[in-house]
Image (cartoon, rainbow, N blue to C red):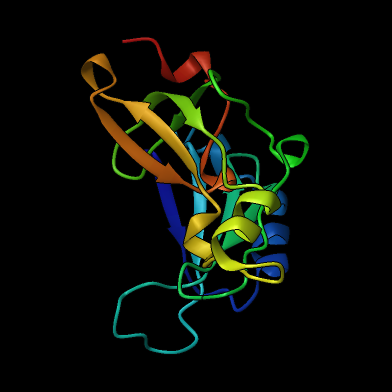
Length: 155
Protein backbone atom coordinates (compact mmCIF):
# COMPACT_ATOMS: atom_id res chain seq x y z
CA UNK A 1 0.00 0.00 0.00
CA UNK A 2 1.51 3.31 -1.00
CA UNK A 3 -1.13 5.76 0.16
CA UNK A 4 -4.09 6.05 2.46
CA UNK A 5 -6.97 8.35 1.63
CA UNK A 6 -8.13 10.33 4.63
CA UNK A 7 -11.83 10.80 5.17
CA UNK A 8 -13.99 12.56 7.73
CA UNK A 9 -11.87 15.71 7.75
CA UNK A 10 -13.20 19.04 6.55
CA UNK A 11 -9.84 20.81 6.39
CA UNK A 12 -6.15 20.00 6.08
CA UNK A 13 -5.10 21.41 9.46
CA UNK A 14 -7.42 19.11 11.41
CA UNK A 15 -6.19 16.12 9.38
CA UNK A 16 -2.57 17.08 10.08
CA UNK A 17 -3.27 17.44 13.82
CA UNK A 18 -4.94 14.02 13.90
CA UNK A 19 -2.07 12.31 12.08
CA UNK A 20 0.57 13.85 14.31
CA UNK A 21 -1.35 13.03 17.51
CA UNK A 22 -2.22 9.44 16.58
CA UNK A 23 0.84 8.46 14.53
CA UNK A 24 -0.82 5.76 12.38
CA UNK A 25 2.57 4.77 10.96
CA UNK A 26 3.33 3.08 14.29
CA UNK A 27 0.70 0.50 13.35
CA UNK A 28 1.14 0.71 9.57
CA UNK A 29 4.89 1.13 9.03
CA UNK A 30 4.61 0.48 5.30
CA UNK A 31 2.46 3.52 4.58
CA UNK A 32 4.06 5.93 2.15
CA UNK A 33 1.85 9.01 2.37
CA UNK A 34 -1.64 10.20 3.18
CA UNK A 35 -3.93 11.92 0.73
CA UNK A 36 -6.96 13.96 1.66
CA UNK A 37 -9.49 14.59 -1.08
CA UNK A 38 -11.81 17.44 -0.18
CA UNK A 39 -15.09 16.49 -1.80
CA UNK A 40 -17.02 19.57 -0.75
CA UNK A 41 -18.92 19.66 -4.01
CA UNK A 42 -19.62 17.12 -6.69
CA UNK A 43 -17.58 17.64 -9.83
CA UNK A 44 -18.50 15.78 -12.97
CA UNK A 45 -14.88 15.32 -14.05
CA UNK A 46 -13.89 13.39 -10.90
CA UNK A 47 -11.13 15.85 -10.01
CA UNK A 48 -11.01 17.23 -6.50
CA UNK A 49 -8.76 19.41 -4.37
CA UNK A 50 -6.06 17.19 -2.88
CA UNK A 51 -3.79 17.68 0.13
CA UNK A 52 -0.77 15.41 0.63
CA UNK A 53 0.84 14.54 3.97
CA UNK A 54 4.04 12.56 4.45
CA UNK A 55 3.97 9.33 6.43
CA UNK A 56 4.64 11.27 9.66
CA UNK A 57 1.64 13.52 9.18
CA UNK A 58 3.47 16.63 7.99
CA UNK A 59 1.54 18.49 5.31
CA UNK A 60 3.56 18.67 2.07
CA UNK A 61 1.12 20.76 0.07
CA UNK A 62 -1.81 20.39 -2.22
CA UNK A 63 -3.28 21.08 -5.62
CA UNK A 64 -6.60 21.43 -7.39
CA UNK A 65 -6.38 20.39 -11.03
CA UNK A 66 -9.87 21.77 -11.60
CA UNK A 67 -8.71 25.38 -11.36
CA UNK A 68 -7.90 27.19 -14.57
CA UNK A 69 -5.99 30.39 -15.34
CA UNK A 70 -4.31 30.41 -11.92
CA UNK A 71 -0.71 29.21 -12.43
CA UNK A 72 1.78 32.01 -13.18
CA UNK A 73 4.77 29.67 -13.46
CA UNK A 74 7.40 28.59 -10.99
CA UNK A 75 11.04 29.64 -10.90
CA UNK A 76 13.63 26.84 -10.87
CA UNK A 77 14.92 28.12 -7.52
CA UNK A 78 11.45 27.53 -6.06
CA UNK A 79 11.36 23.88 -7.17
CA UNK A 80 12.20 21.31 -4.52
CA UNK A 81 13.43 18.80 -7.10
CA UNK A 82 15.81 19.41 -10.00
CA UNK A 83 16.24 17.79 -13.41
CA UNK A 84 17.98 14.43 -12.97
CA UNK A 85 16.80 13.84 -9.39
CA UNK A 86 15.56 10.34 -8.57
CA UNK A 87 12.14 10.53 -6.95
CA UNK A 88 9.66 8.14 -5.39
CA UNK A 89 5.93 8.39 -6.04
CA UNK A 90 2.85 6.27 -6.53
CA UNK A 91 -0.83 5.88 -5.81
CA UNK A 92 -1.41 2.14 -6.17
CA UNK A 93 2.20 1.02 -5.96
CA UNK A 94 5.50 2.71 -5.26
CA UNK A 95 7.57 3.70 -8.27
CA UNK A 96 10.94 5.31 -8.83
CA UNK A 97 11.50 7.83 -11.58
CA UNK A 98 13.85 10.53 -12.81
CA UNK A 99 12.81 14.17 -13.09
CA UNK A 100 12.99 15.04 -16.80
CA UNK A 101 11.63 18.59 -16.64
CA UNK A 102 10.37 21.14 -14.14
CA UNK A 103 7.10 23.07 -14.11
CA UNK A 104 7.07 25.96 -16.60
CA UNK A 105 8.66 29.19 -15.40
CA UNK A 106 7.02 32.65 -15.56
CA UNK A 107 8.91 33.55 -18.76
CA UNK A 108 7.46 30.53 -20.56
CA UNK A 109 3.96 31.32 -19.30
CA UNK A 110 4.29 34.92 -20.53
CA UNK A 111 5.55 33.69 -23.91
CA UNK A 112 2.58 31.35 -24.33
CA UNK A 113 -0.23 33.34 -22.65
CA UNK A 114 0.96 36.95 -22.76
CA UNK A 115 2.36 39.33 -20.16
CA UNK A 116 -0.27 38.71 -17.46
CA UNK A 117 -1.28 35.26 -18.67
CA UNK A 118 -1.76 32.21 -16.51
CA UNK A 119 -1.76 28.47 -17.15
CA UNK A 120 -4.05 25.95 -15.47
CA UNK A 121 -3.22 24.37 -12.11
CA UNK A 122 -2.54 21.04 -13.81
CA UNK A 123 0.45 22.67 -15.56
CA UNK A 124 2.24 23.06 -12.20
CA UNK A 125 3.79 19.62 -12.55
CA UNK A 126 7.09 17.85 -13.06
CA UNK A 127 7.63 15.45 -15.95
CA UNK A 128 8.97 12.23 -14.41
CA UNK A 129 10.32 9.37 -16.52
CA UNK A 130 9.65 5.93 -15.09
CA UNK A 131 9.12 2.32 -16.07
CA UNK A 132 11.55 -0.02 -17.77
CA UNK A 133 14.09 2.09 -19.62
CA UNK A 134 12.22 5.29 -18.76
CA UNK A 135 9.66 4.60 -21.48
CA UNK A 136 6.73 5.69 -19.33
CA UNK A 137 6.16 9.12 -17.85
CA UNK A 138 4.02 10.89 -15.27
CA UNK A 139 3.09 14.54 -14.75
CA UNK A 140 3.11 15.06 -10.98
CA UNK A 141 2.77 17.98 -8.61
CA UNK A 142 5.69 18.56 -6.27
CA UNK A 143 3.73 17.43 -3.19
CA UNK A 144 3.30 13.98 -4.82
CA UNK A 145 7.06 13.46 -5.19
CA UNK A 146 9.31 12.20 -2.40
CA UNK A 147 12.99 11.48 -2.03
CA UNK A 148 13.57 7.71 -2.25
CA UNK A 149 13.23 5.91 1.07
CA UNK A 150 15.47 2.87 1.49
CA UNK A 151 12.87 1.14 3.68
CA UNK A 152 10.64 0.73 0.63
CA UNK A 153 13.31 -0.18 -1.90
CA UNK A 154 14.27 -3.53 -0.41
CA UNK A 155 12.63 -6.39 -2.39
